[in-house]
Image (cartoon, rainbow, N blue to C red; front, side, top):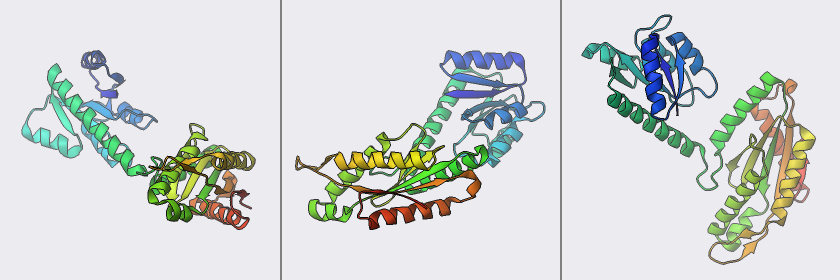
Length: 297
């Protein structure tokens, strides 16, 4: 874990750095609250902060207020380091947004314990967020998390003037699988289908379960023809794969239909427009007899 230290006094800052590194943490150091705030706004910013109260440019309490007023997805745990030991000062620090405090000069064992508490809380928060964003059956992104990430990706593509493609996939005649082989078999097909999609993608592509037997894939930086090739490759993989039946020792084959849409940054299309076009292309694929790929017009 990377810990950010915000401390204007050089000797105290150095002592904190040495102590934390000795315990196995990575350390990023800031000389005042303003520099710490700038660091916290970078990508991959630390999630745990040890901040002095009294600092030039921006003090520790103002840093707490700014962090709490930010709409970051991940939680930032803040420990205030202060010589102010009065009860009213501690309450003031906590009310500003600090999670914990350590009185100067700090005791190493006390600091180690309080940092450990912060680390556990951050780990729990990350696990809660992971569970909230994951489809429990397939282990991929659920609809809400996928849509949030797709929105972020569209905004990024607008800033960087790059294309983006979306693939909407639907398992053909899935109801027949449930009716013939049971819902456990249907669940297994969904799990293995999601695995097939995930294995076909690059590290920065992402896939989510849109609902029922419908799935969506986002291909950042990819325009129409390559996106169609990806969808066709997945279609062939699904068609050739045997899907395991639970408790029966057998397997079945399934097919899937795919709608592909490519979004150019200059198009100005928003999230709803892109999804509507992908859905229309998928509907066309089903109208052509299923087990095929159709590009949005």
